[in-house]
Length: 258
Image (cartoon, rainbow, N blue to C red; front, side, top):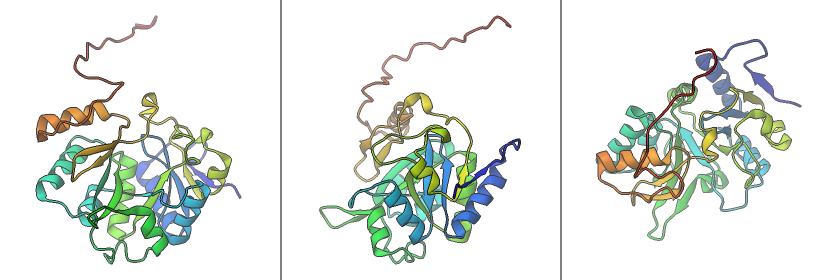
């Protein structure tokens, strides 16, 4: 059966209304496809739904999913020194930067993790050589994601997922481009059209917060790199494509109607 799509034809987006519907679908154990600015995401909060997303994406064992949430959830679920927490706060809250993080996890009996099956815990965590359990997380900063994250935080629900595509086929930037197998596995689709960072043709940056190592260069990375160096004194690796040693000037394009 095809998923329900919101907003319905002829209805304008309303991020609070749409986030509430997405939250209720998650609460009922469903799977949702939602906009993330980087592309469309494939999410659930129930063990069955997480399993469905993992299988549908054709993920292999050892290939992780991520927690998708707010800065509040990041603080709750990671164990970091105050200066690292403040860095992530500034980047995601004050600077409105979407960011994927890898950081040491709280104990896995934490109330927001305890309900997860062993299989799903293994899909969102990794163990380092020194025995530290790390958690992968996306802090999304669009109005829709903030509202959905707030609803999840207030409820204690945890949203887990990845991009809405078969593994290895690339982030989908419009709902129309999502593979039928993935689309049909969802219960609800929030269609906000072409995503904001489509020009990058990249998914999100992943930052190891402890070692300050970049695990993946994503959309907007050159901006993140400048901010991290300017305010926190860390020099991250250079983006091989979007270099910022010389940025040039900006010009507008006038049309015949100007």
